[in-house]
Image (tube, rainbow over all chains, first blue to last red; front, side):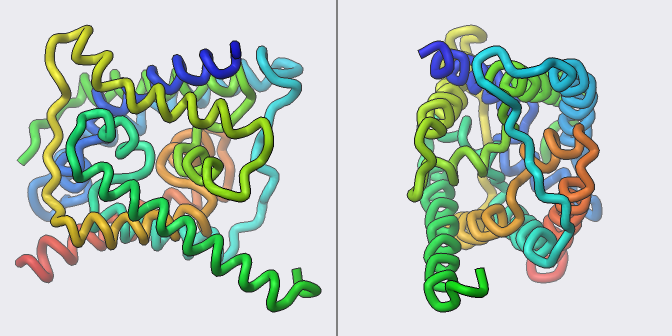
Length: 146
Length: 142
């Protein structure tokens, strides 16, 4: 139960940060990328503020033997920069540029009670499920290839 | 036009950073929002469902808490049409699944850990987002 309450409270701080920063506002996000037009450089300050705090904070936290409420740290182990990673990131960027929402930006926007964030999230989940179906079909078609 | 808000944006960024550090300190997990949403979909890993749902619920509660604290709801503006939201959403869902993350997981947590994968992914999606916005606003729209 402590884990659930902590996760909720930390998610709340994260969500407030997203809202205050402007990341939940597609008009602001799209203007950040529109250097040739109505450029709004604000989001560089979001990235800067978040990165400085996280870079220092992670150093302090990861020097401990384990987290407060879990047995160990779950850190990504993949090291390879491959087509899957870069292709996926490229597709994500195209979608972000079309809609103006990213996953972190849209979740707090859901709480505003407007229809657009819900429409985007439904489509986002559909995209994730499409990939799972493709990957399941692939694994079944070639079980030995892994 | 949107107003340039360096102080608010930096403050928001600091809160995002603090929350990312707190999640690592408490549960030992990367604050990647696409990973949390994906982790709620089948097949789910036992024991990983509850905290993800709670974190996302906390994020969804953020506007109401801000309203209670400041007296006003944050205002957003969505320039994209419904069709664009659907197409964009599907592409984001596919992209983050293959790319193993988004702005939060790669752009903040991964970059802060100096992960080469996250730096490569972040540079890639920032570039394609910029090109997409340019094409939509200045090639098609212009």
